[in-house]
Length: 546
Image (cartoon, rainbow, N blue to C red; front, side, top):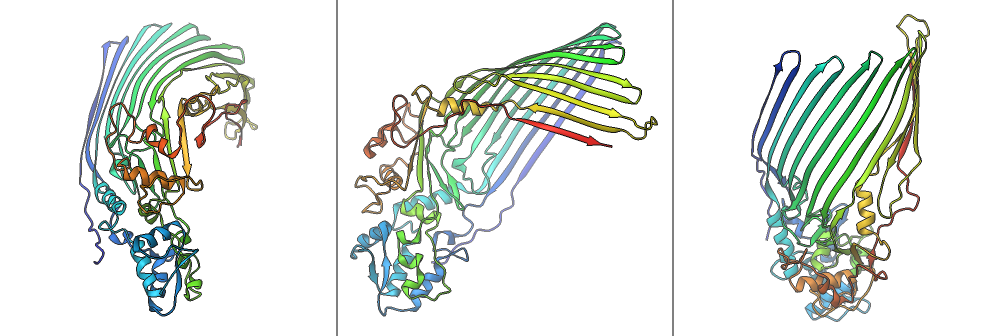
C-alpha cells in the first residue's frame, strides 16, 4: 500500500482585543482617580504535524539512518546463500513468531528472505501488532489542527491623594484573569501531552510619602499579592510516551500543577540631604508564601530512543557481514520502531505527597550615600545586606553583604565629557523550585515525600509471561512496559478512583519493585539532594565609560 501524505490546512484565527482607560480629578489639586481595562478574546489554532506522511511507520531511508539501503542490498542478492539475519532479544521474538530457529547467536536465512522479514519487522503494521496499532492511533488522534483559545482580562485602578505639602498617598489595585487552552500543543507535542492554564492575580499597593523638611523625607510602601496559577492536563493520569523526533504523548510528568501564592511586602526608605551628602537607608521585607500541589513524576513516563541494530539483526550493525557493499552504512533501530518493539530506554514514575507549603521570608537592609566631593566629581557608595531565608535541608546563606561604589567625573568642567565607573556585588534570590525539589524529591531524615523510581533498560529482571514480543527481553524497562501494556495500563486514560495515575504501586510489585516513602532507599530510587553549604548565586559587575 502506498504512503499517504497530508495536505496543508490553513489555521483559523479570530481575535478581539479591546480596552480603555479613564482618569479624572475627584477633588481639584487634591485627589485623582485613574482606571483601566483591557481584554483579549482569541480563538486560534496550532498546527501539530505529528503525522504528515505515513512513511514514518516504514523502514527509515534518510542519510542519517538508511535502513532502506540495507534492505535493498539484501533483496538484490536474491536467495542464494545465507546471511546472519536475526540476533538479540528482538530477533529472538521475531524468530519465535515466525517459527524459525532461535538465534544462537544468529538465525541464518537467505538474503532476500531476510530482507522481507526485516522490512516487515521494521514497519509499524496495526493489523499484525497491537502495540503498533496503539502507537499509530496515538499519532492519528493527537495531531492535526488543535484549538488554542485564550481569554484574558486585566483591570487596574489607582487613587492619588495630596493631603498637604508634607503628606501624599496612593492606593492601587490590579486584577488579571487568564484562561488558555492547549498553549503547549504544537510541533511534536500531542494533544494528550498538552494542558490548559487557569490563572488569577490580585495585587493591592499603597504608599505614603512624608516630607519632614526640604532635606529629609520618608517613603513607606506596602503590597499584598494573591494569585492562583493552575496548569491542568488535557488527559490526567495517562502514562507519558516520549518518542524523540516523532512525538510526545500522555500526561506531562509535572501535571497537574496547582499553585497559590500569598506575598505580603513592606518597604521603607529614608532620604537625608546634608551639605554635600545625600544619604538614603531603609529596609525591605517580603513573605513568599506558596502552596503548590505538583504531581511531579506521578503520571509516569516511558522514553523511547534509538537502539543498537544488533538487537534485531547483525545486518543492521555490520552490513558488510551480510555481503553488502562497503559504502552501505550501519543503521540503528529508530525511536518509533523501539516503541513498536516495546523496548523503552527507561521508565520513571513518582509516588507520594504532591503538596508543597513552605513559606520563605526575604529581608534586606541597605545604606547608600552620594558625596559631591567637588563640583566636577561625585562619589556614590553603599552597602546592602540580604537574608534569603530557606527551609528544611536547604541552607540559608547569612553573609550576603553587597558593597557598591561608583563615580562620575567631569575632567574639563564643561559638562561635555564625563568619565563614569562603578563596581558592585549583586545577589540573586534562590528560585523557589530549588527548595521545593530538595524537600519533595530528596531524602530528608530517611523520608521521601515523593518516591521517584527509575528503571533503565540496562538492568535485567525476570519478566512475567505477558511480553508483546514473546519471549520478552529481560531488560527491566521493557518488561514493565510490555506487561503493563498487556494489562491495559499504558492505554488507560482515566485513573481509578482515588489514584493519581493509571499505574499504581500495586502494579509494580509483579516486577519485584517496592515503593517506599520512608526507611532505607529501595532499589531504583532516585533522590535530589542539596549541598550543605549552598549559597545564593551572585555576580560581581564592573563598568567604565566616557
